[in-house]
Length: 325
Image (cartoon, rainbow, N blue to C red):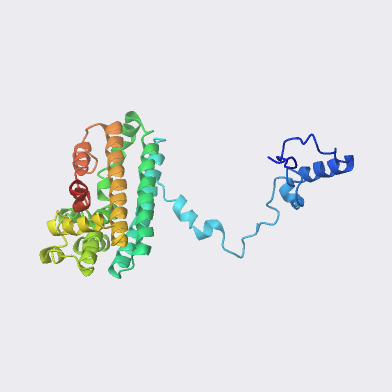
């Protein structure tokens, strides 16, 4: 270090003492928010409202002739959609938990369908963002189980008789997510037969190619030798392992720089299924925590049925290819 160098903040014993007026000026600048070392101009003075900690004086307060926050979000409808049937305090938690989950699932369906359309058009970058968003939505849904798990068995027992046969098993949005991700089962249409408009939506999703089906067709368009029977299969059937699809993914994983967008797509799908598995796992553990192994309100076996769903693999080749790499 040369003799004339000075470390900011360390007193310079060789320097002449600053005039009192200069020291006072620096102190004044620091008090006004300037550089703590006395260098440069002082920061501009904050508005009076900010200095008082209020800062709302210029905000619009009259919404008699313009759209407000509540108007934009239709909060009157949303916040008045909770109608507990029991006198139990905890039923509000149960309703809000499931209603907010349905809202997140609505967004997940919106993003999945947009991503599928992008893949169909060979526009992969937007699809990556949309798939990543769905994975984050699933993470949000995973965390939501932590709130519901504050419900004790005795608290749930008090409200359960009022639920009738209603069950999350009957969620038509969840069923469409399952179908879009390839877990097809035509028997799952039956709970929606009493609502023709809903049945039409779920049936259309069952009969259309899943997201993974569309990705496999993308592999074929890129020149990979996908078996013809895999490209023209019965879309209403669940996804099964196919050797030609695994061979294609093996080539992609062995040459990621050559097939970077396909490699990225594969990893986005693995992220998505990983998040979905975590959601399923938290679902079953929350059910076991609250009702044990009782039968579900919708007539399923409850926790045993949910545990069986943990074994469902949505994108089998993407998981098996890790073993053969």
